[in-house]
Amino acid sequence: MYNMLRHAHSGIRWIVLILLVVAVVNALMKWQSGKSFSGGDKKLFLFSMISFHIQFLLGLALYFISPKVVFSAESMKNALNRFYLVEHSTLMFLAVVFITIGYSKVKSLSVDTEKFKKGFIFYAIGLVLLLAGIPWPFRIPGAAWF
Image 1: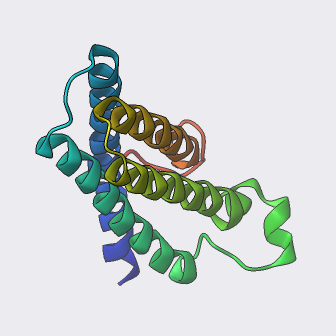
Image 2: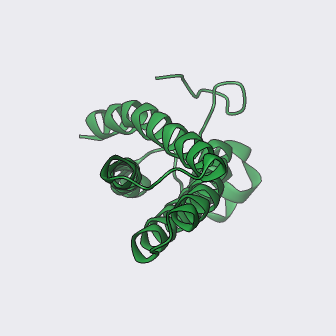
């Protein structure tokens, strides 16, 4: 069960990352050019949020069964254990919160440029938090690209 969840979590991160980058770039370009907000734009924001929520739920399940997450006082002294126990989970929680708030703002606004502006701001913050929290191989020993 653990290996299946870990592989799913590792693979889906690329889908989430691609969707978020596309959503942020799309929002910025259309906000700056003053284009109208279409159903495709709404779907892009929605699919980005849904994919991240699925990823977050997989991560939450892994949080409680992973051997990398050790609930002890010693974990705070070990950089790898601390990363998975505190840093990764906190950054991802904050990212999912910003993206969810961003989608709510986009949905509730009526002016197209404001939709793109709010979507860009909240999704970009979520993307930065996501990038900071991913266990990249060059940052975390033992992490892999897939």
